[in-house]
Image (cartoon, rainbow, N blue to C red; front, side, top):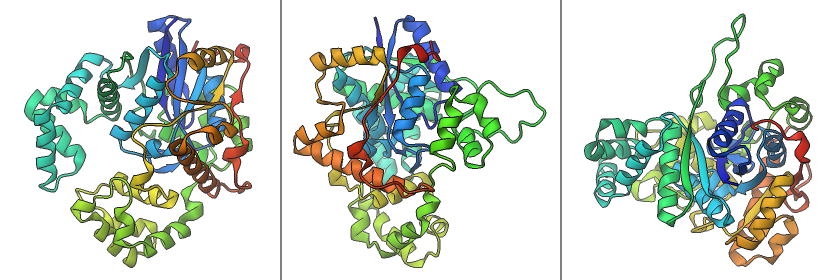
Length: 414
């Protein structure tokens, strides 16, 4: 039996994710087990997840995933390179995964391998540093450096978000010397982040982007979103996350934060651009702005993209400094499993290279780095809960165990 790893946000789980599970099992066999490494309460778009990680784990299990592990917030809110590295480390640490399945716009592994090889070459890395020194943003430097060495066709792969992330998974596995094989599923339907202007009177598309589905949920268009969710997801989401958590709930707290942060505070954050003068620019923007929208407008340049600035602000809100990011994850946090996932956990207890946390109390038995990472995760959950319409009592990280689902009701993706 093959065991495939999938890295996802499942924000929320939708028909596109179900198709990826189906295609993965079609390629590896119907008995293939799936381990998902899922972002927790905060996602790479520097935003709140549409529902908390335990509910999203439940929906993933309903969708056909067998075991859900958490990608810690320090990696989940990072750039593609750090995001992929943290996820690959966790899958390698399981000791049982033999494939990493990811979606891509090109649908072929070999072209992505070629891009990964080029990026890992010393010549390409030197070219990226040289271009960055000239004031270009990182993504543009990277793509131009690959085009110089591997041609436009290979470089253009990096212009598509899922291709780009797939290249980073391959690079991360290569750096580990991992025996996990990368495989890719051709992305179908809506573009990543794509929006559908109108669906009135038209034949509904088979797939929507997660961005469109989140927008429907945020604006209360449940009837439009429901066909793209796992059966039974709507009442769970309506009960727990209606309206979904939003950073708008803490907008004044964010504004107070950026107004009072000095350049030295910004410089402590990961990817702070301390050597590029970014902390000073952020301090000036904070001293001048009257809203977060104005802060981003004042700080943004061609070099400092909106996405990068949003990640910095979120990490400042969460209190994540460069010193808080370990070289590799310290544990495997279980968010949910079904009966097959329980069998996988039995195998992992014999083969895993990292401690497995099936109860929050297990975190107290970790070494100091692991305890520190878990404590940070607990803080991130408490700050996420401030973004909810109804704020729960703090400390949920220490009181909430994994979701356990009966195998017979998990049918999607099979």
